[in-house]
Image (tube, rainbow, N blue to C red; front, top):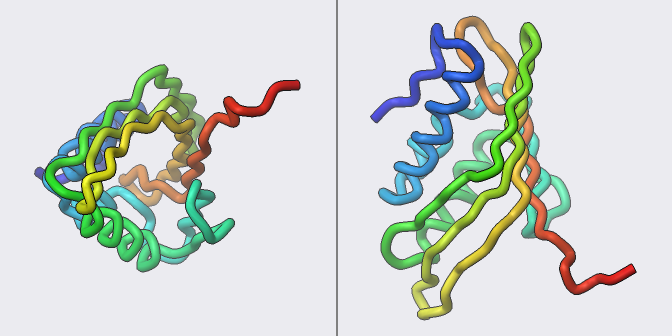
Length: 142
């Protein structure tokens, strides 16, 4: 499967990207999982795991491969509560990312994170230039 982000509306490109991401995680295919990300140095990631900020496509690809290598079997993803907003050259998706998997040492992964992707129209493609993942701080009470 290739990601169809060329020549589509932003909404369709984002829907296709999420379908591709889900399939890529099930197959543990890092190249496919990152196929709709900017490769020109514009990409930045604010992730749950250190460092505070990661940047660049090569680092994204490395981090994705490391995660896939640390897990056993397929990784199931689901993005719920999706909201997409679009302007002429920028679009974003926000939602909740549910992930279910198992580390090779047997520990389960069952998480729900807040998930935001910012897409930029580059030529005819909609590519991710920024990603932000965060965990709810349920243990904190104010």
